[in-house]
Picture (cartoon, rainbow, N blue to C red):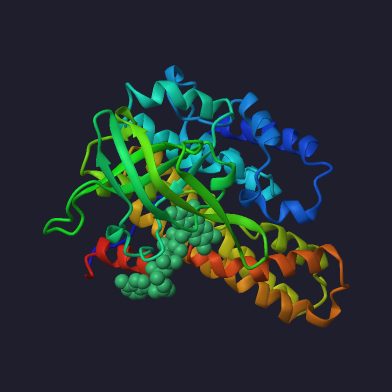
Length: 379
Ligand SMILES: Cc1cc2nc3c(=O)[nH]c(=O)nc-3n(C[C@H](O)[C@H](O)[C@H](O)COP(=O)(O)OP(=O)(O)OC[C@H]3O[C@@H](n4cnc5c(N)ncnc54)[C@H](O)[C@@H]3O)c2cc1C
């Protein structure tokens, strides 16, 4: 069995300077934002907030300047992300494009699509959604059936995507589609296409989440035509490309910082003289500290150009465990004593309903553990 080693990353001094700049910005920009919005942090989209973040150079931070990026380090980017998440900033509009769509276009379409589209992402003007899951294909992503066939001048897409977060607010989708036969290896015949969400034939239908909110969608492709140069990377290599995209999707601090507002509310409400409060909250904070070191270690791997897939899967798996336990811990500690309508009550209600999704989105617990086991040579 191989060992999973995540080397702790040390933040260089420029990160501290940046952290103070982000905190000063957030203190002003978030001054009037109520808890009901802060609890949603990266699930909440606010295009105007996104444009303010972009104006400060905090979208596309690590990308080359020729694509509108800022050529800063993954560790500097990490500091911006963790401050945004800890404050509950509404970063959802640009989150996907900044995290994975921009890097994917730069890597796999550096001369055609990236120069056209990535600068708009960096300016906070182009938002993306992820077109992977389908009604019968979630964990078994290789079984997708949405099909693209070549035409004289491009591609014709028919099929259905589901659980597509913020498709109703996105300008583009990166869709994983079937362009050929699966072949013997099961993973052949897949490709990635850039789809403009305004294309005729494309319908976005809301699906309400357990909070009865419109977060994700069903997206139906009915003879949707896409230009030939919207193929990202190479035809038939979609599986390898989507693997690289998923490693980015799982690599950030949002994988353990989604419930920070509940933790902060619990700390505020805690009774310093109650040993149960001290023991429980001390344990949660210790978990957060360990997860932060692991998550920073993943950013360090990205900074060194290493593939963070297994380490990122471990952070996401452990992060979801800690975050999903928090609503129950809050009920145990404060249950009957929470004033209805208080901010603690609000954070508990929201997180209780949101937390079950944390071990589904971005790959389920079982799938992540399979990836970790494979990486360690256990299967
Ligand atoms: C909040 C949220 C946002 C999402 N946003 C998007 C999005 O923007 N774009 C997108 O494409 N998708 C999105 N998804 C979908 C998400 O990626 C899928 O829900 C996830 O991949 C699981 O697929 P599934 O729901 O079909 O469940 P299934 O794959 O049917 O899994 C059901 C259960 O069976 C288990 N299971 C499945 N296969 C195995 C196996 N081989 N071994 C052991 N256990 C197994 C799973 O772990 C799970 O517990 C989102 C989901 C959520 C909850």
